[in-house]
Every structure is written in structure tokens, then in C-alpha cells.
Image 1 (spheres, rainbow, N blue to C red):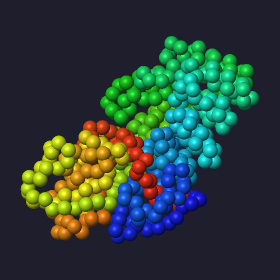
Image 2 (image 1 turned 90 degrees about the vertical axis):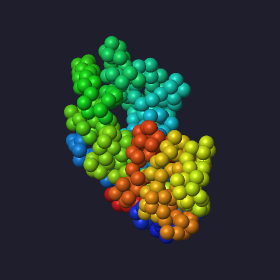
Image 3 (image 1 turned 45 degrees about the vertical axis):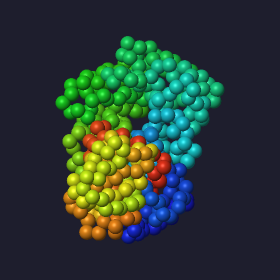
Image 4 (image 1 turned 120 degrees about the vertical axis):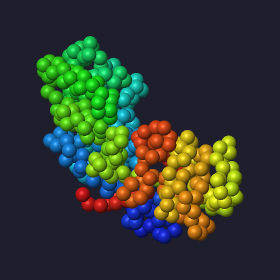
Amino acid sequence: MTGVTDRTETAAHPAPEAAAAEHVDRAGTAQPDPRTVERSAVVDLAAIRRNVRALRARVAPAALMAVVKADGYGHGMLPVARAALDAGADWLGVAHVSEALTLRSAGLDAPLLAWLHTPGTDFDAAVDTDVDLGVSGWELQPIAAAAARRGRAARVHLKIDTGLGRNGCTAEEWPALVRAALDHEAAGRVRLVGVFSHLAVADELDRPETDTQVAAFRAAVAVAEGAGARLEARHLANSPAILSRPDTHFDLVRAGVSLYGLSPLPGVGSAELGLTPAMTLRAAIANVKQVPAGQGVSYGLRYHTRAPSALALVPLGYADGVPRIAADAPVLIGGHRHRVAGRIAMDQFVVDLVDPAPADPAALLGTDAVLFGDPATGAPAVEEWAAAAQTINYEIVTRIGARVPREYRHAGDAR
């Protein structure tokens, strides 16, 4: 990769796992020496590759779509997309055409689907760059018009709403949408490539609604094929269904959070699923000071030290995407787990260095505080931060902001 430099973590900023690293931004541009970076989200692209291989092995012979929307779930869309394709992903998936165009501009020519549109979406550019387009209804006509202007057929996937109630065509309107798409196909304006839907409760294994959705999806596919559709890709499975419902795999599956090594199944850890979390969030400790018992900490003074202690200041806050609500979340410092003390502020939060107290707290200045990462390295799991913030692991990683540089490990590794 152009502009990538190799280096090894220094003792001043130990990472959970010492390894050669490449520090580039999410567009692949070289960035300053990571040893000067005060905070970073370390993304292990080797973990992304391992996850792709593990997921492909589960779903074969179905193809695998690597979903890299939302800047690769906060991990960096372009580096993740490259790593996923290198490891054998067959498709890329994004929400918006603008994301798809970024991938195409970077030279990625793999099959690519974008599925969330507005009347202002640049369908002409999508057609020009061979971006497949999801269609729930109204989009078909402007997509066909764009194809006519560009002089080439647009590739479309019709979406049936099988019960989620968001995007997707209703069952009542489905036959008409299929007929309209096939009419445009006969006229050379579109190619009806696929039929897809999205599951609502696949992460809750005892919910009967998933069976209902699968049946509705099969019925919609039958209507399309009965009308003459020559489908290449029938796709329904998201990450929880990939891992728990082989009957949903069909021709293609869409791997989202599982691609990043995170479990979509409550109560089931990543390791149990053969997945490796790819992101470690860390920052160099900015201050350490001794305080007496009863010292109030952070806004609102909702936390007070129980005994004489040392407080460590971590330069990450809610402006960086660290949830303000996540008081008492775990932080790994000096090989020991401690807890967030008091409210998380815009740029920083405090950790009370108790249980166990370090022998020399001042020596921790400049060393790493690890918020989350791969539990196999001793780091807290993303799910622990999600529990502290009363949310899900998806949100924790996707909300990490642009002020936190991404540091990529194993960007240049061979497949």
C-alpha cells in the first residue's frame, strides 16, 4: 500500500499485542509517527482477514458480502474493504451510493451493492461505476431513467419487506414491482440481479418471527422467479443469521459486525464464534496524581474516592465517541483492570487506580490505557463498554470519531 511505513510499538506506548504496524489514515494516506499519537484506534487487518475466512467457511457455497458502511463500522472503510477482498470476500456492501463511489474511486472493482437512497442520490454515477442498487419501490423509475441517460443497464436488487418495517416493498405491492423491473429489463434499462430482505430479530434465537420472515422471503423469491426473473443473488442473512441460521444463507450473506470480530449474539463471545475483535481503543495517560480519601471526581461530583488513591487522566471523551453514560466501564492500565471514575467529559475521563493500587503511580504517565480490544490479549471486551453504556457493541465501535487516528496493523500482509 502506498505511503505505508512499518514500525514496532515502543515501550512508552505498549500495545496489547506487540507487532509491526502501519499508520495511515482511512484513505490510505501516511500519517505521523504513531509514537507521537496520544490516542488511537488500533485496527488489526489480519483479524479482519481471519474473520472473513472463518465466515466464508461457515456459509459455503454461499458467497460473502463484506459490509463496510459507516466507515467500516468505524474501523476505516478502505483498509477494511481491501483486507476483506484480499481474504476472499466476494462482494462489498454499503448503505449509500456516496460510500460506494469512494470505494470505486479507490480502485476497488469488486461487486458492490448500495441500498439506502433518497431522491438526491447520484444514480447516474452509480450506473457509470457498476454499483448495484437496492430498490424498494420508488427508486426503480429514477434508476431506469439514469440508465437510459448513461446508455447502459443498471444492476438492481429488489428488496421485499418481510417484517422489519423499514425499507422494502410490501407483499401487496411486490408483484407490481417485479413486473416493472422486468419490463425495464426487457427494454435494456436494468438487469434484475437479486432479491433481498433484512431480518429483525435474528439475534434472538427463540423468536418465531425469523421463521415467518424466512417464509415470506421464499414466497417473494418464488413470485419473482415465477414472473421470469433470472436471479443471481438471493440474500437475507445478516451476521446473527450467518452464525445461527444456515437456512437463511441462500446465494449470498451480508457480514456486518461479525466481519469486525464482534459477536451479534447476546451472551456469546467472539471467541466462541471463531471471531477476533479487530479494534483496540487506547490512549496515553495524560496525568497521574495522588489524592486523599473523599476526593470528588469529574462533573457533578457523583464519584468520591473511598481511600487515599491515585487518579489517572485518559485523554478520550464523548467528543471522540466514548459514551458519556459509561461510568464504571473497564480500562486496562499497567496490566490491571480499573474502572472509569465519575462522568466522562468531552475530551477526557478519570480512572481511580485502586484494587490493585500501583506501586509507583507516577510511572504510569504516558503509558497506555486500553478501553477495549481483543479479550485474548487481556483487553476489556467491547461488550463490557456496551453494557456500561446501555447499548450494543455495534454502536461502541461505529461512534469512535475522526479525532481518534486509526492505526493499522498488518496492512501489507499477504493473503
